[in-house]
Every structure is written in structure tokens, then in C-alpha cells.
Length: 304
Image (tube, rainbow, N blue to C red):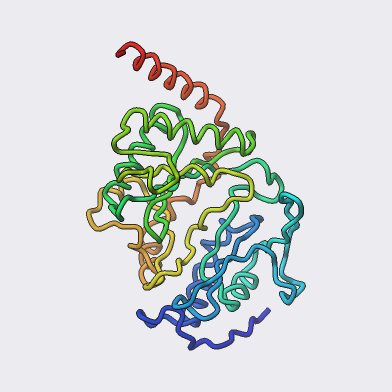
């Protein structure tokens, strides 16, 4: 199917002269990489029909005028339903970009098991845009989650301010269990270094500390899709990383853009290519984490 692209010359990112046509070309070219991450996940579209100089909007319900070949799925919410778009094809992807979608946000579960996530996300939000603190926080999380709890972790720039540390799961625990585990993991790190890390969401409670945001781990919450463009000048891209790339002194959340990400993909394999093969239950990790928290509590009591 040929999607008619309208207004290819419209400036979406005016300061960096990136047009709607440039964005369409990017998504056509990246389709083979992004579609596996979009597949069968309810979408939240971040649309900017007039470009990023005007406020965009988040869209969950599919528009009534979307053609009937656009796949949708009814997802239960409190007191009703949401009719989300499902993007499994290049045609759907390009149609949505032509509608002014710049960023694709995806649920942490797929349609076949909506209440059982297949990933857990920590969003590391830097204090005062200090990316060095984000790097240290990501390494701290990895040390706990991998070395002490036996999980496998993956890493991604958000294309905005920070990093995502992500654990693949095998859909055996529901969101309540996964979120509780994520909160306890964040709590353990904060207890061990309270001057550096926090899980407090209100900004006035963070006091310059790095936020270990675990709150995305809930039913119908979303995270930015790998290889999605962000609505920021330069069109930065959320990009999966290898852990050793944190050693780079020039790395930051917006290092990769629609202009340079293909050079990267031509030089290295997608670091998340085997993400799903590492999915596992949190059961054993949860037991180990509770033991660590108990040890921490006992140590604090002994110091009093």
C-alpha cells in the first residue's frame, strides 16, 4: 500500500531544518528495527501536527477518521475502555508519522497478556541535567540487579535527558508484583547511598539527588519505544546501548539522532537484538532482594 505523504516540506524542527519528509524517511528506513519493539503493544502517540514550536498532544484513542486497515485494540481502563492503535506494519507506522506523530510510547506488556509485563523499566532522571550522575546510577542499578539478584539488564538513551535500565521478564508476574519489586530495588539503593539517590517523585523532595523512577511499571503506563524520535531540536533518537558504551566521555542522552543512528547500526549489532531471550521471572531475585533489605535493616538497628 502506498501512503500519500502530505506537506513533506513542513518544518517540524525549525531550528535544525528537519522537515516532515525527513521524519517520514527516517521512520521508513528504521522500520525493520523499530517494528519488533512496537509489535502488539498498545500505543500512545505524541503528535505535533504543527511541529515542535507548538505544543503537541498525547493520543491514546485512535481517531475516528483513521482508515479501517489500521489495527486497533480495546484496552480496559478504569470506568471504560481505550481503543489503542497497534502498529505492526510499515504502512501503519508511516501513516501515523504522516499524521504528525513524532514519538511512539509503548506499554510494558503485549496484547496477549496485558496485565503481565514483559519488561521492567527504571527511568533515570538527572538532577540539573547532570548526565554523569545518570551514568553512575545506571552502573549502580546494574550491579544490584545483575551481580546480586541474577537478572539481565539492558540499557538505552531516552533521547531526552537520561537513560533507561530495562529488565526483560517472562510474563509470570503481574504489574503489582513487578512494581513492588522495582520499588524495593530502588529503596535498597537509596538506603545504601541516601545522599545520592532517591525514589521520591516530587521535585522538591529530591534535593539534587538522582531519581530512580520505577513508576512506569504499572498497567497501561508506557515508555518511549527504542529508535523512536523525540520532539526536541535535532531529532534525537532513543537508542539501545551496550553497557561498555557508558565509558565514552562524549555520550549523553541525545547523542544519537536521525542523522547518525544509521551509521551506528551499520557498525554494531542492535544491543537489544536478543532482549526477549533473556526474559525470566523475578521470583528468585525478589527473595534475594528481601534478604538484602533485611540485612540492611538489621545493620541500621545494630548501629543505634
